[in-house]
Length: 270
Image 1 (cartoon, rainbow, N blue to C red):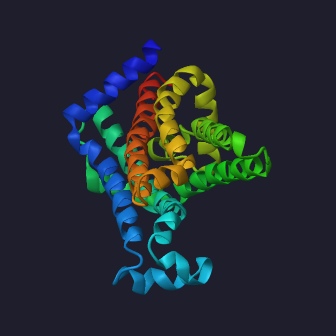
Image 2 (cartoon, rainbow, N blue to C red):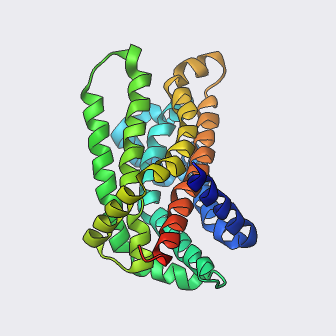
């Protein structure tokens, strides 16, 4: 536990001394908030000109009318968030890792240089992201096939989330291996897994504890219908906004803390 606390303190000290490193997280969180707002405006022009036809084709005209458009919002946002994660999210991850590398080396963190390097390494990072996504998607499908009834739906959602987080943690050092060491997809995956095995317990503390913050959001999402019946349809937007904020916090711990561990141990020759 002392190891994890030390890394968290180091992380906070870096953000305090170099606020620039915090900017990519803000950009990504802001883009998620903008996505949610744009999707909320789907029934209105000019957004409807672009998004209404595919929604009408796949889901039906009724989901372009209030309040059903709001009930479709979580599903649409999941698709949009997935695309954002596989594009801007990957670039921001590479940028953050590169900036933390600069800080560790005693240099001023450079945005443009590290962004260019992130672009150069984009396909490699996308390959790692794809592996993690496919494994997570498979878990979602498998747990979805377990028809345990509505009584256990919440428990299954939480269980699925924890398993997916576990998968992400196993490969959490692969991205730093790409940016810091210039590894390709397969060597980065191998390097990440071996590094994780060496620091398994502290890595779980560093990442799993912050990840638990999302469980209340899962509970709220599972009870959206009841929540809407007791209040108003826009309660869906409040829950999703809370999810964006919590994800923003979790992303900080998921990216910065493992990168600091990787950099610290690399200095020792590990």
